Length: 224
Image (cartoon, rainbow, N blue to C red; front, side):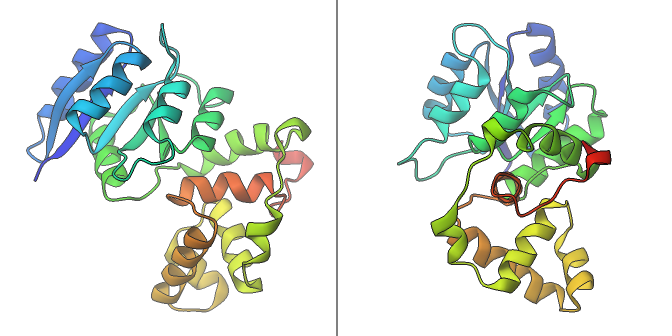
C-alpha cells in the first residue's frame, strides 16, 4: 500500500511543489493539503494519513499546536509528523519534537531526500540528521528553563539501558551502539525498544529529547 501523506503549509507554491515531487513516486500518495494548522487537524482525522509534512509557522493555528492535537492522548493510530522548517536552529522545531514529532526536514532538502524522509518516518524511525539535530537539541535543551527531570521513568531503566539512551541521544544508530558497547546489533535494537517502552516514547526522536532534558548527556561548552 502506498504511504499516505498530508502536506500542511501556508504557502501554496510550497504545497504544490512537495505534492508534485512526492506523487512522482509509486509508493507515496499525497491524500490532502492543508493551509493552516486547524485544517491540518481536521484533515488528519478525516483522511488518516500515515505521514504529515508539517510547517511550523502557519496562520489560525501553528504547526506546533496542530502537532500536539494530532498526537494527543487517546489517539490509537496517530500519523507520524515530519516538521518542515527553513531554519536548522529553530526553537519551535525543538518544541515540536517534544510534542511528539518524529523528526524535522529543511525545506531546501534535495527532492530525492524528501521522498526517502517520508519512507523513513512511515516505517516508524526518527529522522534526525546527527549534526543538525545535535546543534538544535544542545542549543535549547541545555537552557535551564526547558530542563525537565523524569525521575520515576528513568529509575526504571537498568544501567545498560541508561547507557543506550545516552548513545541514542548522541545520534548513534543501532549498529553504532552495538559497536560501541561490544554487543550484537540485534541486542542493541532490543535495548532501544525496551527503553522506548519504559519511557513511553513513540520513537528515537522523543528519546533524544528525554535524554537531554534529564541531563543524561553532558554538553561540552565548545558544542553549545
